[in-house]
Image 1 (cartoon, one colour):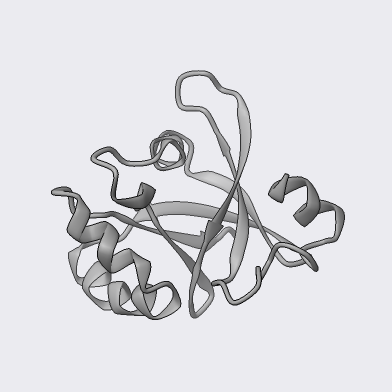
Image 2 (image 1 turned 135 degrees about the vertical axis):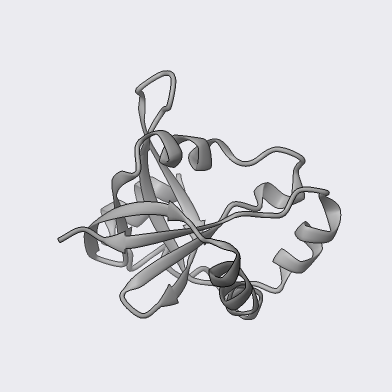
Length: 130
């Protein structure tokens, strides 16, 4: 429902839910199924890049969208009314160390998710495609 309302209102409804962090729509293609999917996710701005946290609520495994982006890194996102072509890559350790506090600032719940799991929660950097 979130995706439908977000798209129908060009992000006017759904980009920010009452008191919550900003949300984008991530398009991704199934790594095995090749099915096109769209997932609403919290995002962190970092200059011209956009950063996603593959937390899955502290679950032991990474989310499906993370695996899909690793297999098919060229994709699109929608932030508000803007649709952008991006290329996904996993943040390296120094980038993650710099970006993790920014993510906590946007959504403090990530701290609890990290405590809940033994895996280091990956961060995905979406760079604009030229």
